[in-house]
Each structure stands twice: as structure tokens, then as C-alpha cells.
Image 1: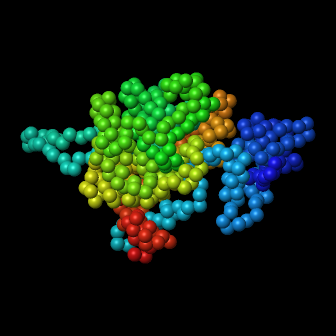
Image 2: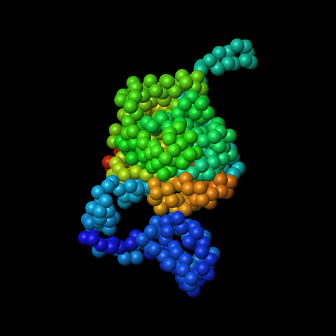
Image 3: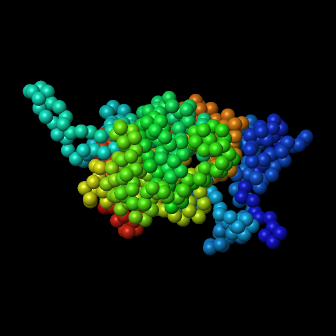
Length: 503
């Protein structure tokens, strides 16, 4: 053994004076950290991922978890994480995997943008006393409306309107597939969006029968693996999304390990039980915007032109030009997934080093579409790294019509963002298919939490709009004059098309 033992990332300590030997930590930890002995609880600290399930279940608050109790020698270049990765790959010779979004220390642009508020010359609006319009329509909008007057009192609309999604809040839940997360997690989110009047994505794992009651609020996804895709699947969704790329792993496909493909997942995805579900990096029938246009038209034909079709791409260097092409492909919305977008599993080198932040991507796309006069041809949905209501407001100011949230919804259900979703041992019953773990997540209770989160963010968004003297989400969209950059250099301000503070 050349490398030998390495510093542990976490240290688990059980206070013997507080511990009553109830064994809940042993029962709840699926990573094998705790072991019951006659007189004490023994811990195997190296197995800990800091999911905090043990802490949440301990009735005496006897457990503490310390991060990096004994770290590597500090060095400005050869950081602990760099050395840890080298050790792992020297031992395994394999690609390192990671869950959730980008974990590198890039500045978060949302935190360097501040919102405006009314003062003397223009009055603010009290959302508790005056109506606020947050209803959002996703899809193509006509350049102009034409009417015909049939009589003195009868006017009819001549312009043919294409199908749009009607959202009661500009917040949706993004695509997380059944297989990557549990059915109970899907049920909870589906019930929440149905109650609120918004939508969620199925992910590329098909649509389980248990979600049929909520299908009017589901966006079905067609990805490169085409898992679970048939006419029945397409017709059940309120909209269809073609997944070209994902912010957490631009340029590569996906891989659901066979251990997570149980009988139920195999039926929903239409693949053999226990087999790996591998999504190719490209769609093998799409190599140009013209190819994409054919798929968009095919999906619309298959659903009698009744469903809007979205196209999801990862935020990469030339995202604006790509989005402009998508707008001309006939798609109704483009979903842009920033490099902080979550995932169940991705190579760490992609997750942390490929792509660009959603703030810059949305601003660039909105600017490009406006300059080309095609902004009304397509809605923009921002995804990847939306953490709070202020991020929603800033994303809309930068040009988004609506946002997808993902990790925030999981956190509302108990997720501690430990980043080990790919192991299938999620102690909270979210990113797992193990029946005993899945049973820990109560769909009703989790649904209540997700609903509360979206409603709270919607209320805060209304308050932020009211403070800015805006009573309609339409007036906030692309309104970058309501933003100022704080501690951003001029080149970044130019990309965002935002003035600095004080200007």
C-alpha cells in the first residue's frame, strides 16, 4: 500500500453521555457508519457522506459530524480536493463520479446582481392590497393580433394562437427521471405542481402509471435513449421536451446503473430489468438544426399539434447562436441549463469544468433573440442553480420567461445535497430504488413541503415586484434596468447587459 490511509472527509462523534442506545442511527444509516455494541455505538467514520439522516433521527442530539477534522497539508495549488482526486484515480484508474451540481469555487453571478426598489418619484405597490399578475404563458406568441368586427358589439379574433402552457407562477420543477429518483419523490412533486397550477418534467425515464392522475401538469421528455417513449406517453404530457444537453454534463449522455433498474423502472422505461440504461451523447437522428426541426414537427404531428414542444440544451460557449437556431426550428420554448444544474451522476471533470453559468447564458440568449427579432417565437426557461426567489426574479430580469428548479425541490423533501445520489443509498428515500429506503419518504408530507416552498417563493417574487413598482411579470421580463452589477468587471457587465451600481 503506497498511498496508505488518507484524512477522512467527515468525523462522526457520538456523545456517550447523551446516547440512550436506541439504535435509530444504526437503523437509519444505509452507508454502514454505525454498529451497535452491548454498551456503546461504534462508528466507521470513513463511510460517512454527511447526509445527516442520523442527526435528524437521534432523539437526544447525541451525534455531531465534523468536516475535515484532519486535513491534508494546505497548499494554494495542490488543494485537498486535487490531491484526493489523484489518490482515487491512482488507485482505481477510473473516471470520478459526482452528484448534484458544479461544486467548484466559481463566483455566483446571482450574488453579484442587486434588484431595484421604488423610492420618491415612482410609488411601490403593496401586493397584499393590490392585484399582482404572475400568470405566465410558455410558448410562441403572435407578432400581432388581428380581429374582425362582425357587428357593432361582436368582435372575433382572427389570429390563430398556438398551444401555450399556462402557469400560475413562473416556477416549474425540472426533469428528474424515475430511476434516478424514487416514485414517491415523483408523486410528491407531481401533486405539488398540480395543486399550485404549474408543471414538472418527467425526465427521460418515462411516465409511471401512478403519475397519470397528474399528467395535465407533466412535461414528458424525449432524450437520446428514447426510454419509455411511445404515442401514449407523448399524448399524456401537457408538453413535450426534447433533451439535447444537460448543464451538469454538457456533451455527454447519461447512465443509470442496472442496480437501479428494478421491475417497475424497467416497465416504465421499456428496458430489461437489471440492465444499464445508457443514453447516447447525441441523438442519432439530429446533426443539424434541420434535423431538429424534423423531430419537432414529428412530435407535433404525433400529438395533432396540440402540445408545445420544448428543446433543452446545456449552457455552453455559443449558446445564443444555438438558441437562435432552435427558435427557428419550430420549437415553442428553449430550456437553458446552466453549469450548476443538478444530476444524479456525472463525471466530476464535466460537472465542475464544462459549461457556463445560467445568468450569462440567459442574458446572451435573450439579447440574441431580440436583436434578430425572433424573441416572440420562443419562450426561455432558465434552469440550473436557482436557489431562492431572488434568483428567480434576477433570471426573469435577465430575460427568462420562467425557471425550472430541481435541487431546491429535493431539499424541501429532506435532501442534504451530500452528492452521492449515484450510489442508490439515499437515506431520505429520494435518490434510491431500495424499497425500505423509498418507504421513508411520505409523498403527502413531501408534497406539502414542495408546495409550501414554491408558494413562498411566489409570494416573495410578488413582494420584490411590488417594491419595484411592477404589478405584472410581463413587465419584469428582460427588464435589466431593474438590475445593477456589484463587484463585476466591465466585460461581465457587458455580457449581462447590466449597469454597475451607482449608474
